[in-house]
Image (spheres, rainbow, N blue to C red):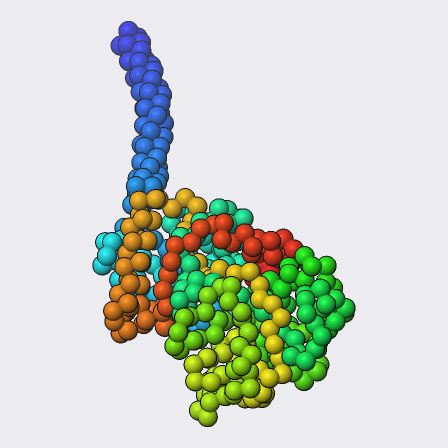
Amino acid sequence: MKRRALWALLAVLALIVAACGGDGGGDATTTTAAPADETTTTAGAEETTTTEVMEAELGSAERPVQVLFVPSVDAQVIVSGGEIMDQALTEATGLEFEVSVPTSYAATIEEMCAAPADTMGFIPGFGYVLASNLCGVDVAFKAVRFGFGVYWSQILVPRDSEIESIEDLDGLTWAVPDLGSTSGYLVPLVQLTEAGVEAAEIVETGGHPNAALAVYRGDADFATTFFSPPLVLEGDPWVFGDPPEVPDDLIDQCAPTDDEDPDLFCGDNFRVLDARASAITDAPDIIQQLRILEISPEIPNDTLSFGPEFPENIRTQIENALAAFAAECEDDENCAWNDSIGNQDFYGWTGIEPAADAEYDALRAVVDVAGIELDDL
């Protein structure tokens, strides 16, 4: 019995040792396996997710090209017109696009810088300069409006005044549309600063025609507004370098048409399109009373720009497709372009032309002189 008890005790101890060894081995195996399984699963899941994001091609349904429009007009107009462009570009390139309208000019720029390889944006010149300075956003095209890829600022003075040069404006009262206007304040500010001119007072009038009317009524000595070239119906069109003012022999003939929405004609062949034309309801004789002292250097129009890391091959596809989309209107006024960005309720681009970064150096000077920052947009 004692021997049997001893053997039984030894057997129990053996089982206990085996069990302990088995539990320890089991624990080690389980512990090793569990983290391995967990790590494998987690790493696998993370790896799969990361791989899917990284491997999704730009322009695919999983990663569409982001098309951003600044909210300068009604957002719904932009979205509906942008979708027409989206469809045309998709048909031409096979790429997928996603149109959006950020809440502000600054938000548009921030989104382009945050997604440098995925974004293209329709942004104005000042916005482009800031975006370029901030993260290297690069311009591809600029807008063309009625044959011009640029526009200008003008300085208006009384026609009978003795003001003959920009230096003569020193110490006078200056009427501006508002302090955020490119052609009405920011560009002229550079001109005046470079000429050593300091106004005695700056009067914000609330609009380009209002600034012209302030001089017309004697409330200011000079005004700065936008300049659009005159339309010559017959003969050679106006080109930069031609006098911006109405020819002397036509001044007395300048008057509004009799339409409910009148135009400003000087004779039958010369139509005025600068800011004075917007004030003729209140001042039918504004041409006889105000003259253009000087216009600014060219101001490049709005841009189509790409994020700084946007793939070159895809960018080329989009540029070619966009140029073809705009060119359709050369033969057909009912083209889809005119229902999209060419619509006057949208951005009113009558066409596009290639643009280079250096064309925006004048605006960079304005940014520096005026101290404009992203928040100012």
